[in-house]
Image (cartoon, rainbow, N blue to C red; front, side):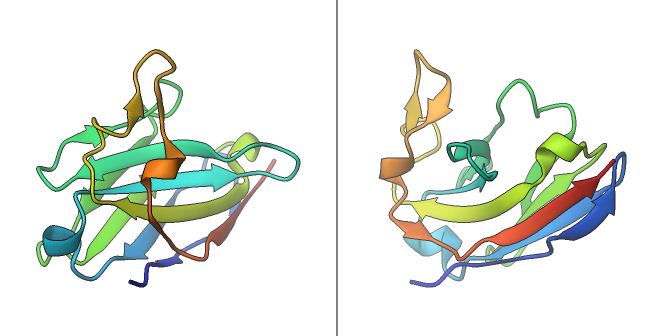
Amino acid sequence: VQLQASGGGLVQSGGSLRLSCAAPGFVKKYYAVAWFRQAPGKEREWVSCISRSAGTYFPDSMKDRFAISVDNAGTTVYLQMNSLKPEDSAIYYCAASTFSCHATMIVDKGVLNQRDYEYWGQGTQVTVSS
C-alpha cells in the first residue's frame, strides 16, 4: 500500500497551498485518510481527516482555514490550506486507516489516535515565511 503526499513548498504568510495525497483504492481499501504534520522539535499532530462517507474532521484551530476533500475517482485526497501562518510550517503526512475518522478519535482529547493509521506517506515540506 503506497500513499504519496505532494504539493508542499514555500509560501508567504497569508498565502495558500493545496496538498495532495495519492491514495489509490481509498474507497475500497481504507475507511479514512488523515493529514498530520510535524514541525522540528514538536510532536506530530493531526490536521484533518476524511472518512469514506465523506465526513470531515478538523481540530478547532484549523477548521476555519483548512479544507479536506477527495476527488471523484476516490484516489486522491486534498488538503486546501488558506491564510497560512509561519506556525503552519512543518512536514505534512497523509495516512490511511481501515477505521473511520470517528472511530480513531480519542474523544476526551479531541485528537486522532495515530496508531490506528496503518499506512503512511513520506511527507511533504510546507514552509511559511513571515
